[in-house]
Image (cartoon, rainbow, N blue to C red):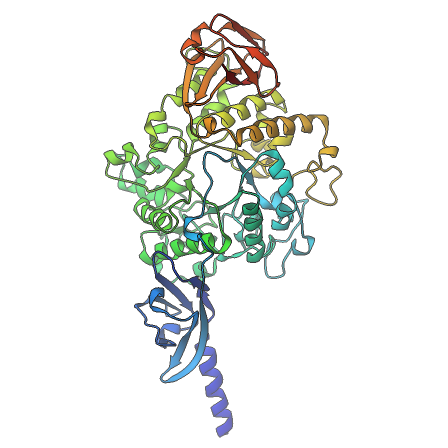
Length: 618
């Protein structure tokens, strides 16, 4: 009987104090901020004593209302060993422990380079790009299983599929790759998009492993390319292990009337800076949930803010990332996010971070860029280096379809650029005509290559960082209005062994696919070495007859860009552009490779619905 009681006591003690999770799992020596806050999670763990081995000092130990959590802060500068133990003690007895490692950083890690206006960003939804490892299409421990017959289901694309096609991306002229989120998303359905993450330190097993993710980043870096992580600060998936056992009630925003505390956001994020906004509308926008399976995270909670800050830094350091794109930026607590971004860029001064501020007014978008004059007027600085140019996007979707009038046609593009004075860093805007949330450009124009060439010419030659969406460069379309999000996120042709056609292979492309791809590759490979495009000045001229002319120039070069949105050929005199053409006698159109006479006494002819990019010569 005595032996049974002793065994029962031992098993009870061991099970009671078991460490279930430690996050971050390890850290690094030599960070600019030497402090790291370690989350230790286990059943009733806060009721036990926490001690560190090797005389490592606990700077701060914080408990929450949930006894399953303890947050331990240490100063890594005070730790002289490469590892130490986190010991859980019941009285004087160690009942469980975790070996915590402090790794050495990669050489020059703090000064890692990042994507900029020199780059072309290629946006991939990994589940829909290429299936490089069929063995991970479904995972026993993950609910949503692969089934390509379900438009909104998992289709099996993965990190290995992207790694296998890096030649394709590089040949296209892409120099940075933005993946929609690839951390674990274990929601029951629609998990393929990744925006309802359930584990922030683990790559979804259906995409591969943490090591696969790092391998992708390293192989991109070896090619002089960057991996951009899509980071979600505003919401997690409702199945996230921490949401299922909240550290504290204020970890997320909840509302008493809704199931699981749900209330949908009113999406009016202009309340963030509107001086006339009511508090109820502000709360409705910022604290409301993005969707029923996406609880709204409270960045005003210091523990939450520290958790997501360290998580972002952990991925940058571990995976050698080349930048971040932050989802739904204005839906977050803006003071918390200013602190979040500053902590990251303090650690990595060269790292670029671009925020998604889906607003159509340039004043509203520019508010979110670091050192914005608009923000300064109301006493706010976001510290966010880059923003997405949704104003230009909104105008582009209309401008190429309209006949010219006072406020229609290419004048919309012209007027968009008249607001450039609002942005403190005009070259650090992401410019695009579609992404994973918008209607496919080739659907809008029914597969007509000419509007695609016009739009690609525009984003490839204006200030900022051009971004293209996977598959559009081979003519992929999809009607969001009838097929929903799945229609704009179809599988890339040739990404699966069973596909009847492989558009990754130039010998297998149709004539239409070849025309789309070749135009894109020619433009973006030309752009790679054009400093005049990366950081030059702009001079533009009001559109006439729906023809828009602008120049990119610096002390050494000048490039003339012509966009003709008319169906008909246009011929016009060049004397109007004398201030930009004086001293030049000819130019080479990089699209047609033709050398043209260019002088202020002459004229030029451009085909209908076409563009010209003319390198001027003296």
